[in-house]
Length: 295
Image (cartoon, rainbow, N blue to C red; front, side, top):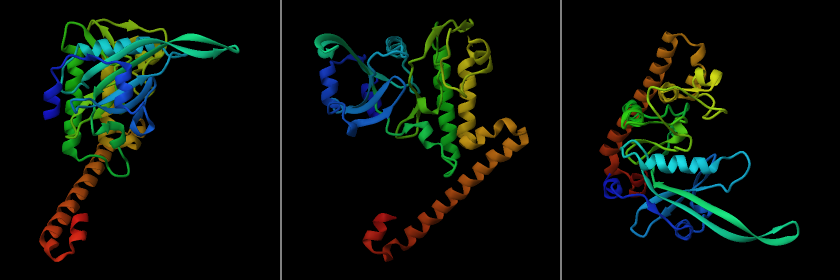
């Protein structure tokens, strides 16, 4: 929290591509922490000690409108300041010439380097924490995450005159800090709209399973697009991936029973951890030092 408050008032910086190469060890595999539809994310450390996530966008190729994605994410994140929205630290947009082989000849081609830099969040993405086998988070943490996502989304929709529709809200695009505070990220598909209007798109955007029926059937974008995605996300937080996949075939009572099952699972695990803690606290003085350190 101290690190966040220290840097949160800073205006996003215009980084050089050379600096980003330097702090990510030339975008090495060891520094890679994630891969998305528009780029690869690397971990880097600035001179002031701040750890950041650097999303290096793919070079242009057919099928990816990466220019629009870059502009959407950069400009929309510059507009927002909220504890439940990932903070934009900086960006990079440079054009250089590179000698490449083309049709048996060497020619100079124009290369565009683009990157977006964000605060680094130790908890990773929410989807990596949702596990059917381990019952996922405790219920206090689940409530905290759901509440934070709702507050972040409410800010996007109602925090200014022009609403920001995220249009790709899902667990993979929600990041967690060390205290399990959720932050909405990945604004590449986001759009600015009047909160009362309905718009249309020519092609599919978003992620299957998180898109509302009116969009699937008519390509209509309304303020409820993100709300539908939020509902899917909440159900997965409460019941896990398997619980959501069976949700359509369940009655309300069956779903309530499923959620109670998850709650019971967490209660049992919590009770076992408390008992283990008490036992090790009482008997630790009689155990070898090495074993105590493992416990």
